[in-house]
Length: 155
Image (cartoon, rainbow, N blue to C red; front, side, top):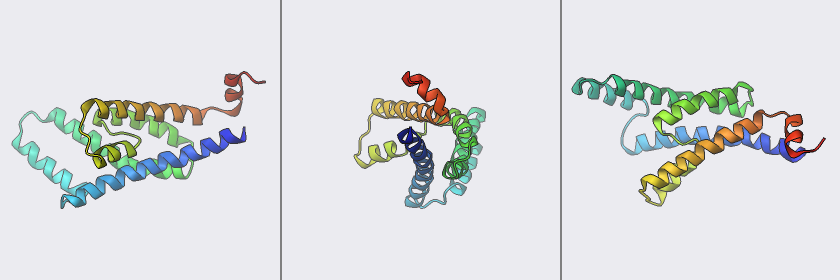
């Protein structure tokens, strides 16, 4: 029982770290390209929408992706503070992650880029694995100890 509680405690911090890492990687990539995180993206997007007609769907995707990036600050904080609503917040974020194709396990895209691998199927597989791991672990963290005993078949 103590091992399960210890694992749950570590999962809170793991997902908080993954959100912090995602924001850091985003900012580092922006700085490496001589851009200001968030501000440069908004400015570049506004220039693009002026040049492209019919940008309603593109605008929606941009806004949803930007909302996800900004929400990572909050979710990291919620996970580190072990707020009960962090799990629900992260599950809502899953919708945005699926739309923007951003991995919850921020290590996956970082490792893929470090090794210079460019394979659509690998990226898709890692993305699906990442989201399944997150959803499964969040459901695991939400379970009460009596739910876990009944799953193991112990009284």
